[in-house]
Image 1: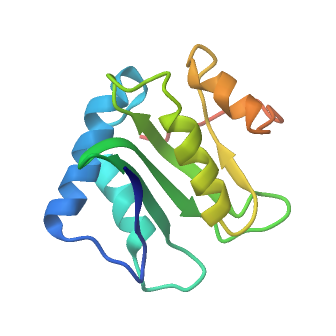
Image 2: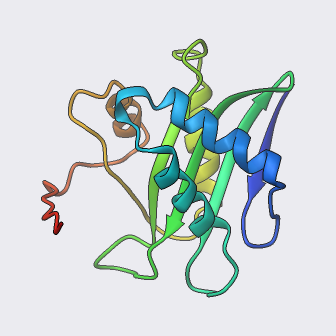
Length: 148
Protein backbone atom coordinates (compact mmCIF):
# COMPACT_ATOMS: atom_id res chain seq x y z
CA UNK A 1 0.00 0.00 0.00
CA UNK A 2 1.30 3.44 -0.98
CA UNK A 3 1.13 6.38 1.38
CA UNK A 4 2.40 9.93 1.28
CA UNK A 5 4.13 11.54 4.22
CA UNK A 6 4.19 15.34 4.25
CA UNK A 7 6.43 17.51 6.41
CA UNK A 8 5.98 21.27 6.61
CA UNK A 9 5.78 24.07 9.17
CA UNK A 10 2.72 22.39 10.73
CA UNK A 11 3.67 18.72 10.48
CA UNK A 12 7.26 18.63 11.74
CA UNK A 13 9.45 15.56 11.29
CA UNK A 14 11.29 13.85 14.10
CA UNK A 15 15.08 13.90 13.93
CA UNK A 16 14.99 10.30 12.66
CA UNK A 17 12.43 11.11 9.94
CA UNK A 18 14.49 14.09 8.82
CA UNK A 19 17.62 11.92 8.60
CA UNK A 20 15.77 9.28 6.55
CA UNK A 21 14.63 11.87 3.99
CA UNK A 22 18.00 13.63 3.73
CA UNK A 23 19.96 10.38 3.49
CA UNK A 24 17.55 9.05 0.86
CA UNK A 25 17.99 12.15 -1.31
CA UNK A 26 21.76 12.14 -0.83
CA UNK A 27 22.04 8.49 -1.89
CA UNK A 28 19.51 8.39 -4.73
CA UNK A 29 20.18 11.75 -6.40
CA UNK A 30 23.51 10.24 -7.40
CA UNK A 31 25.38 12.49 -9.87
CA UNK A 32 22.57 15.08 -9.76
CA UNK A 33 22.86 15.62 -6.02
CA UNK A 34 24.52 17.97 -3.58
CA UNK A 35 26.36 17.65 -0.31
CA UNK A 36 24.30 16.16 2.50
CA UNK A 37 24.72 19.42 4.43
CA UNK A 38 23.13 21.42 1.58
CA UNK A 39 20.21 19.00 1.31
CA UNK A 40 19.73 19.44 5.06
CA UNK A 41 19.59 23.24 4.68
CA UNK A 42 16.93 22.88 1.99
CA UNK A 43 14.95 20.51 4.22
CA UNK A 44 15.15 22.93 7.14
CA UNK A 45 13.95 25.80 4.95
CA UNK A 46 10.94 23.77 3.81
CA UNK A 47 9.74 22.98 7.32
CA UNK A 48 10.60 26.28 9.01
CA UNK A 49 7.86 28.25 10.69
CA UNK A 50 9.38 31.69 11.20
CA UNK A 51 7.95 33.38 8.10
CA UNK A 52 4.45 32.73 6.77
CA UNK A 53 5.47 33.60 3.19
CA UNK A 54 8.33 31.17 2.99
CA UNK A 55 8.95 27.56 3.86
CA UNK A 56 7.56 24.79 1.70
CA UNK A 57 7.19 21.04 2.16
CA UNK A 58 8.93 17.71 2.04
CA UNK A 59 6.96 14.89 0.46
CA UNK A 60 7.77 11.19 0.71
CA UNK A 61 6.12 8.31 -1.13
CA UNK A 62 6.26 5.13 0.94
CA UNK A 63 5.19 1.63 -0.08
CA UNK A 64 5.30 -1.36 2.26
CA UNK A 65 7.26 0.70 4.82
CA UNK A 66 9.98 1.45 2.25
CA UNK A 67 10.71 4.95 0.94
CA UNK A 68 10.32 4.95 -2.84
CA UNK A 69 10.70 8.67 -3.61
CA UNK A 70 11.25 12.02 -1.90
CA UNK A 71 10.97 15.64 -3.00
CA UNK A 72 11.56 19.01 -1.37
CA UNK A 73 9.64 22.06 -2.60
CA UNK A 74 10.54 25.52 -1.28
CA UNK A 75 8.41 28.64 -1.54
CA UNK A 76 10.11 31.56 -3.30
CA UNK A 77 8.04 34.35 -1.79
CA UNK A 78 7.43 35.69 -5.31
CA UNK A 79 4.56 35.50 -7.74
CA UNK A 80 4.04 36.05 -11.45
CA UNK A 81 7.51 36.94 -12.69
CA UNK A 82 9.03 34.05 -10.71
CA UNK A 83 7.04 30.92 -9.81
CA UNK A 84 5.81 30.74 -6.21
CA UNK A 85 7.59 27.41 -5.67
CA UNK A 86 10.82 25.76 -6.66
CA UNK A 87 11.17 22.01 -6.67
CA UNK A 88 14.71 21.77 -5.35
CA UNK A 89 15.22 18.02 -4.96
CA UNK A 90 13.46 14.90 -6.18
CA UNK A 91 14.77 11.35 -6.16
CA UNK A 92 13.38 7.89 -6.76
CA UNK A 93 14.98 4.83 -5.19
CA UNK A 94 17.46 3.47 -7.71
CA UNK A 95 15.72 0.06 -7.67
CA UNK A 96 12.25 1.58 -8.19
CA UNK A 97 12.88 3.76 -11.24
CA UNK A 98 10.63 3.40 -14.25
CA UNK A 99 7.72 2.10 -12.15
CA UNK A 100 5.71 5.32 -11.83
CA UNK A 101 6.85 6.45 -8.38
CA UNK A 102 8.35 9.68 -9.69
CA UNK A 103 5.18 10.55 -11.56
CA UNK A 104 2.99 9.84 -8.52
CA UNK A 105 5.24 11.96 -6.32
CA UNK A 106 5.31 14.81 -8.84
CA UNK A 107 1.53 14.78 -9.24
CA UNK A 108 1.07 14.95 -5.46
CA UNK A 109 3.65 17.76 -5.16
CA UNK A 110 1.86 19.71 -7.91
CA UNK A 111 -1.43 19.21 -6.06
CA UNK A 112 0.06 20.41 -2.74
CA UNK A 113 1.95 23.42 -4.08
CA UNK A 114 0.15 26.73 -3.88
CA UNK A 115 0.96 28.38 -7.21
CA UNK A 116 3.36 27.70 -10.06
CA UNK A 117 6.47 25.53 -9.76
CA UNK A 118 9.93 25.90 -11.25
CA UNK A 119 12.65 23.27 -11.28
CA UNK A 120 16.13 22.92 -12.66
CA UNK A 121 17.10 19.80 -14.56
CA UNK A 122 20.29 18.94 -16.36
CA UNK A 123 19.81 18.29 -20.09
CA UNK A 124 21.06 14.69 -19.80
CA UNK A 125 18.84 13.80 -16.82
CA UNK A 126 16.30 11.13 -17.89
CA UNK A 127 13.72 12.69 -15.52
CA UNK A 128 13.50 15.64 -17.94
CA UNK A 129 11.04 13.64 -20.06
CA UNK A 130 8.73 13.09 -17.07
CA UNK A 131 8.73 16.81 -16.29
CA UNK A 132 7.84 17.62 -19.89
CA UNK A 133 4.98 15.08 -19.85
CA UNK A 134 3.65 16.76 -16.71
CA UNK A 135 3.58 20.15 -18.45
CA UNK A 136 6.88 21.72 -17.42
CA UNK A 137 8.40 23.86 -20.17
CA UNK A 138 11.94 24.99 -20.79
CA UNK A 139 11.43 28.75 -20.70
CA UNK A 140 14.91 29.97 -19.82
CA UNK A 141 18.53 28.99 -19.92
CA UNK A 142 19.79 29.32 -16.36
CA UNK A 143 23.07 31.09 -15.80
CA UNK A 144 24.78 31.41 -12.42
CA UNK A 145 27.56 33.56 -11.09
CA UNK A 146 29.37 31.94 -8.17
CA UNK A 147 30.88 34.52 -5.85
CA UNK A 148 33.56 32.84 -3.77
